[in-house]
Image 1 (tube, rainbow, N blue to C red):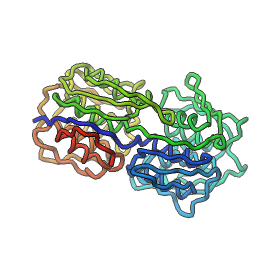
Image 2: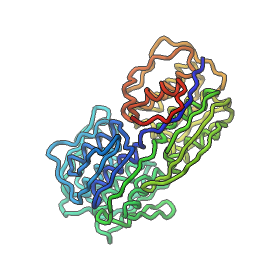
Image 3: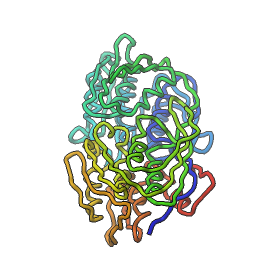
Image 4: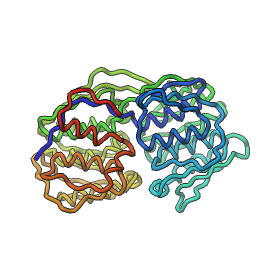
Length: 440
């Protein structure tokens, strides 16, 4: 049995952009209103941390906040709780190290198992006093004022595609001297949200080839109003859900179209999905527009390799669901970074495929299997485990659109990490809602 999706959505704001809007406005002169801020728990962790550091962040409407910055962050009296958010802890590590204030950054049990050496190494090279208090280089992170009073510049070559590490270095670099260059070499062209927003606020960043060079500093930045586009990582669930259910038609309003994030659209094209983009605009350096997609039989080989991974790393779970119902072979390679997300998503998706009786060929950095638009999913009494991973939860809920009977999913509440209203939106699209649905 197939359940169709029909209707229109305005999604919660993009998580990555929301984090950066709070942090960068929080150290800019003046103030700005951030509208359509993500209400997910990860972004709320950043909001609370920035308030603790002295930024004034006040609600002015639904998912809208006025952020009044301060150039000199205050030392927190308590540990900064980053919750489950890797973006919060890694970017704040750069910001706090640059600001030269003492702080301890911690998080929940899951966050304290995620690698932090990747951000400690470049910051230490900039003369930051930073160390991991957890086992194997994991959180909590302790940051102390630099003995020389200020960090130094750096030319750092990213060993892996990581917008978080790149951003941590750039945020730390906002507090160095202008004659002490800060350059990040980014061979894989990871997400560029930080560069775009820094430039929009006045701290120019130049890109030449694979080099990202920070030109401006934090005192160049001026607050402004920012509309956060809808999160394309959240949109991916509805795009795939509509694509795999013939007869569906879904429009997503004001969704982010940053080229470093739109890998999901490239994969939909590989699968032969039909979608259009309209009403394109820009805010805070970020492009956005309306995407309309219609469900139809899918056909085409889907090949996701190292070059495309940075533009869709968070979408691999839901794109795996797309591959299940596309006539062609799905191949994913170069995705070893998935082992270090909220769960080992590579192992999790392989396990789910096998539980669905899919013959899957596995590699150290990915997997390969044959899709089928007429696939009949097996009946399954045992529930799926999601390992506290919000993206696995939502991907499995979309899989349920094609299940003979809905599969049981442990940890459904974890969807709130990035998309608190996911289940409300799912229910409305199932009933064919035609009005625009807010992100409440």
